[in-house]
Image 1 (cartoon, one colour):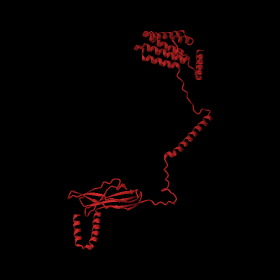
Image 2 (cartoon, rainbow, N blue to C red):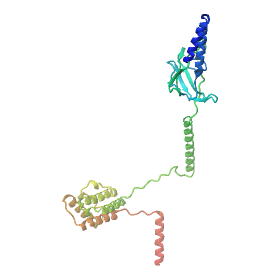
Image 3 (cartoon, rainbow, N blue to C red):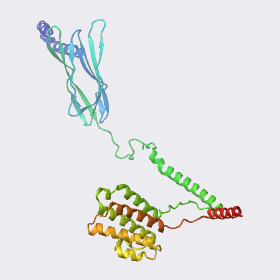
Image 4 (spheres, one colour):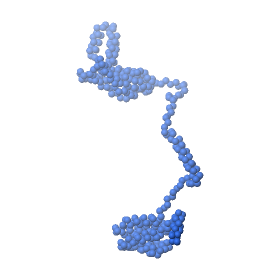
Length: 345
């Protein structure tokens, strides 16, 4: 660059004053064109409509062995010129000279009308001979951004036609649910018709019979026995559980408020139920031992504790309802009785 400037000065001195200005202009043009050949910022067009996107080609060619530090471009070139997207930096090598050309595509736009100067883009080139960086810049250019011409008297129209949204599963969901409901009603109607035709209920509900009171009491007595409370010294707890089981059984079986009664009231109310005098005496013995253990802090013998449990089981078994015979059992019983009679004869 310095040698070219010296040559240009010598040439100007030897040319007459008449042609000096013209020569200077030519030399400047030649100098500018020679510099542009190395690095370029080429636009598809220098005029665009507001919001329109155009492409810029950023390019630099370096000699063999030189390295380029690519400019770090942000989201804007200027305050009014924005970079929308950029491509990767491509490279191409000239086989003859070994020169290497780097190129990148930029898409730019502007939303400000008027003239905007796109400033030079600077490259830093490292020379292998001097190990120094040289800055090379592209030529600036003027970008013209025009607004949209609007005819105020024309009819208002949409910029683009209305786009229809694609159908999704949500759009078909109400119709799908409606079809399922109709199908369900049809199936139920068919079952109802068949059941009425056969004189059967549409839905046969199987009512679960409650567990009899004597089975509940016997299960609780068996559990109490397995816990071995009196063997562990818990005499009071043992008799409290034993009498509570009998009270609950009397209440469920005979509909008496045995849970809220005293021992004497229970014995009085069970006189008519326990027709067997022995069972009534057994109940008195259990309640008496329980009152002594709970209130007098007495400690009955182990044999008495075991006997109380046995007597409680006997009371429940003696007062449980008799099993009901169905018609088939009655027939089989009569048949067996007739067979016994024939055998005896």
